[in-house]
Length: 179
Image (cartoon, rainbow, N blue to C red; front, side, top):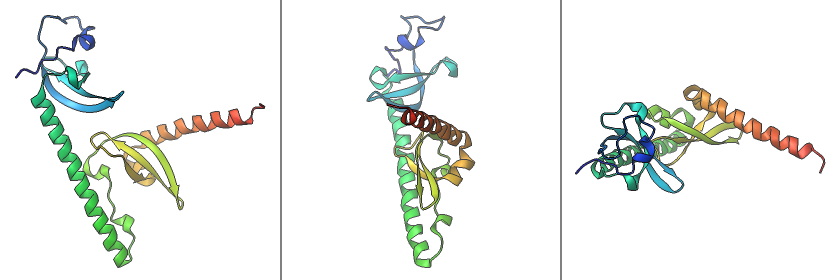
């Protein structure tokens, strides 16, 4: 089975050495995303440098073995994380029985090498701020205490606050103007 992609011409048309008659082969699937309801894969092309990697619709790719391998590894990571979360639940229950602070026991996705992609929202529960964070290789976002986020992703935290400050300022400017 070849790893050829017939739909690559739209992404590679800017390359000087692009040849419509040439077959292009996928070397590796690097990442996955859903854009406008369709699955796309970030593709490393054989014999091309990393800067020529492109996002391609799954339906345009002819590399089922590579996609299957990538999805299998992704599922394994997600299953491992689900097991980690279950273990945390057990530790929290034991901490409560022992009357010790469970936050000492709770771990987070950063501890397992997961990379944050975006802070989705923040919450303040009893004076403790936490963020809901989307991680690149996890299907579900996770709630992380702000102190942990400040250490692992300070720039994302700053970016989140700046964006929400702009929204808050725009809202207060609009609400204070006479109607």
